Image (cartoon, rainbow over all chains, first blue to last red):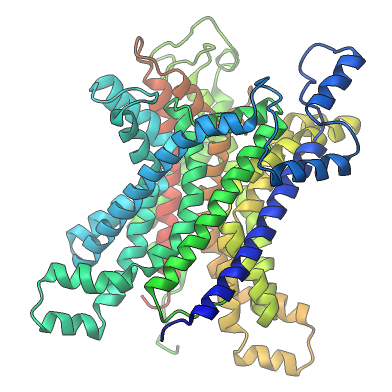
Length: 313
Length: 299
């Protein structure tokens, strides 16, 4: 049954409204958590004369009542202005994010590709070798990868591949060689999660009639697997892509720290340590916006891939 | 369901060598972490001039940047990580179970919107929010404790905050699973009977549904503990969790990672904390998996 266009538009509108509500809640929660926590951004420095402090507060729009600050911030956000960083003086949050976010996104995208491609392949491999050595080995490897977080494997990998063997750089950012180790380590647990999902749904799919029909027609096994079975079996993986993106963004903070990658993650951590409210808020808001939009895309992709799904929500 | 004397889940678990080995490893780790530090010389815990000494008989794991014995640091860190993991998992268990019970039992629209909220929370970076939350409340708690002269709470405020905030983010899976179980259970006859007898909703939830969920809850408790330990180490690794002079496995790993440099190979600062952490997490995860199999009635 094809989904009617009008229904699709209505669904999309409803989801966009929900998206706006979620973002509004995220923005408000972030703002109040930051503003209500004790200690201002200028507390750590030597005592400022009251007149200068007043000017500073006015420059960073931290004066006025809480309500005035909140509505002012919302207004600036709507105009796309994430305001000034209180730590990195004279740099706006927009500027900092414009420099660092592409790095984080490149790392995230690489890990996303590795996680989905390798995960789907590994899960399919395990399913086709069900109960045999390949299956057991793959699932054991998956459990290992899920159990060991990046900050355990990362430093060990640097020790082995960068210091002892000297194959890859210790850290930093530049060519493709800088991307290999971080992307693999960031992706590893999610390769495993996807492989587990894929294995389960592939095992179910391979028992279905249409697969038997395809085989009976004499199609090659690879065609049966990747052209016929995969289309159905991949659906649970698709619905995991939203949480995957969230996990990768969070995980990239640690991986960027381990490998000294100049991405947004490092600025995020520093903004907490420095009580740099608007930078912190900016990163949280941009991350959440990215993820909420990505989730919408994933949901739409899901409905396109599986027409039998009823849209609701 | 009336097969002659089916094995209880505990018996089935006892027949799995993997599970037995995991329980043995975890018990040994916990006991060592609790008792072994008592037998160390007091000088091992405080800074000494012996900076970055490689492993030797006196210091089997070597020493750290401040010349403290790394074995003792790792044991103390394991203690903190285990405590945070267990307490955080219990907090998440309470929240998740309550949420799932209400959602599944209420059903209909309430259930729909409660689960929609869980979906939304799944897809936002919760750990990032928790960072903001910890930052916001740690000082408030410290000020509050200082005002009431609770010195212990001042010292351990970051750990207390960590336990609660990690519990707050790791309850989602528990809620989903409990809800699914409740949906399956609530149409069963004993629930209908209880309702016909005029028992209150609260009583049905606590007396009739909850006891039937214990098995599932225990499995997910064992699977939540490693998740919370990973989260805690994540925060501590970034310098935002456990604060010095306290240590957790995560902060020790961070120290090790910070000491990486091409000139001098300080492998022991990375290898030993990693190994203990890996051992803990693997044992917990393998145990959780074995438990899941043992309690799964289809096997």
